[in-house]
Image (tube, rainbow, N blue to C red; front, side, top):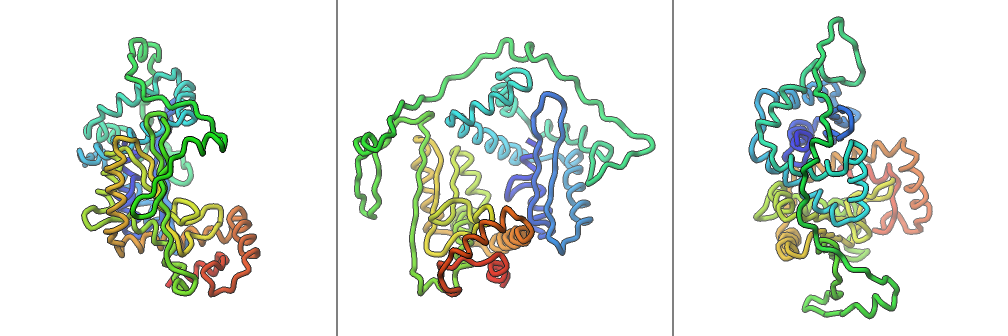
Length: 375
């Protein structure tokens, strides 16, 4: 819970202290569960011209003050919703659930997976403050390198509890709805599909039973042409993510809170994929298309579609969020300059691109994209 409160965006303590102040381009915190006592890991990425020592000091101060000042009920509730939402969404994916259970089995017993959920539901702000006060101390952290002290102060870590005692009387909960066995042959897919044309012209396939009544939906919108989109390539690459940064009635945080409450994910990218900037050195989202993807359950689908309506029709495209996205993009591109795994696909795609440089379909080099994004 503490790691989530520190690093979730945009309400996280580290995000506000390091990203919004433009001291760093990314900041994360995570605490992996293991059989033996582990670590709380904090990471921040600083631009090449950033003040590394200042970021280090800000990160430490932001984390260690929690033991004194504590956290709010809202922060704990938001972290709980995000963690439990991720569990619920993973539970309908058989492969993810199997991996998760195997990880907890490695810690002692697969039933700890469910016991952990029960404990997350009961965490209070005082619990978080108590943990921070006990463990987030100067003598219990390592920054960059380990420098031994003359008289180290050791923190007493509790011994591993007896797993059999913890889970001996554990009772499971109701099972989620099961999916149907489905023949994915082309003939069966066509036989099971009923195409309906709604007024806007979209075509809707008939549903099939899914595990946990999970629903996936994708909406792709295309706009402009190769003439009126000229010189807007860089701007278009920011459009999908920026649309999710707030609407007329919901701030970015309120939108994320609603998605957490509805146990849903809403992502945006180009029509060719989700997530904004392409991975592996590929170009950013292209001009001319934007795609939104939904993951939720049948019961919450109408409410999630209403959120998507707000994103599509009432985005505020906040300038401060644009600046944050721009800094993040530039930092990523700078890093790609020396990453072979990023340079190789970008270079290959660039060489195979036969369009002139002023064509919207032209694939720029990393240096050219930096020049496009920087103004």
